[in-house]
Image (cartoon, rainbow, N blue to C red; front, side, top):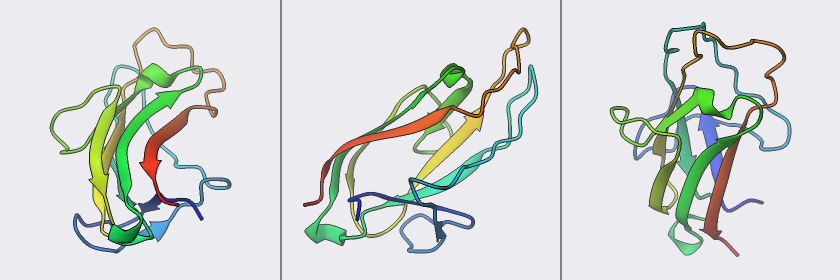
Length: 123
């Protein structure tokens, strides 16, 4: 089991709601158009081991052929290409994700854009 779990659907800060998204099998779909900012997708991040096995110093970034299209926020107000969480335990910390496709973008096949979670924690 990973020290970090990601949840989608309806997620609430400080709660344990949402449906877990397996790291190895699920895709998180985003609908976006050129020159427009997509609707925000909200994900819940939590450590299944709670305070006994916290996730410490988590950085969230994107990689892949169009990684610069993704933007992240920990508060839903200020977005950037990387977001940082110092300490995550057994309740949801919210991650806000949106997509901004440039006007001159080649849509092509961009189904290989990855959200990366780099952290310390869990044993």
